[in-house]
Length: 424
Image 1 (cartoon, rainbow, N blue to C red):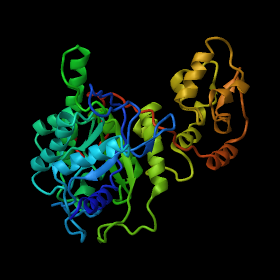
Image 2 (image 1 turned 180 degrees about the horizontal axis):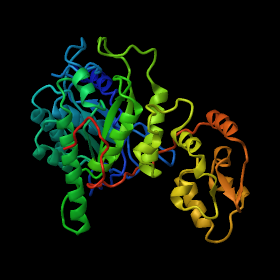
Image 3 (image 1 turned 90 degrees about the vertical axis):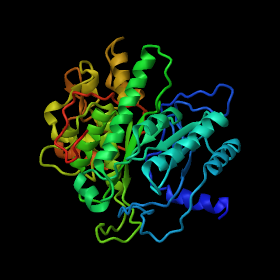
């Protein structure tokens, strides 16, 4: 099989992994080839509007595991192939020199023992870094079940690592991916989180220690392949941010790629649900919302008609209106139509004097939503009743913006919700 055929097969096999967006790395090349900038790489748009590109491939699409939802499952009737280390190195350098890519995302099917698979991925990264002096972005998939020494070595060459948990409960994994171990996946996450924290502490103390995966770790959850509700998914994501120190949880709407009686029959992928989960994730990461605030007790799923922040505001009319002259930063963040930039501008501007309502649109505040929840001088900006507000918000439900690439630091003492997964 020639190289073009391998690229076609292994690029197609990698397309279902959503956890390849990247950011936060500041690896610098000293006289070598390429550089990884904090703005990030992959087929995505950065906050300043630039499109960045990433070579996204599998080392091999041969796999011992037979996960029901996976296009590369062992029982799938597909063409199988693998790269060699040298082929992948030459391909990455060749694409980079032609300005096709800015970095590499490399995963693999589990074609052998986890240590062997992880070792091959690491060897690709090692040769790129040491022999080719490649300073661009590298994202490696962490293979659950491999040794901690290999994970530590991977973190020295890669900018980001990711171990995909895929399904939000142990029972769903047992049903759809019985050969996978949730505890192995969480164990890999825990080790990578600890190694990253140790690396940061060494650098804080000005020790000459190499950075461990400076862009952190991420994971992916498949949405709609199992019967798990949004509350379960949100609580798991919150726990992963709080206990494992993940930078991102990615949500991938289930696309039926194989026939299996264990899988649901869908007319179309649940893209609206995926969209709402990303919005809820945003609230946890940047707006100070706790997982159990996003959905009230008794609610299982996010609204398809309203973004989660607007839905929360409608359920808590006692919290509003928020006074633009007195509210603190986190109170302002609860206002639909008001983001981190707008809240910061209000706090900064009012130090110089009172803010007039007509000044708010100039600060980037979406007044078609925010006006129902703000007051000035003790008077609401809009006196529309609750039913009218609800109708208006449904018509203008918020879309997520570009991601400020950051994450809360892990808190070892954070109380975990009662999840089916037992965190190590």
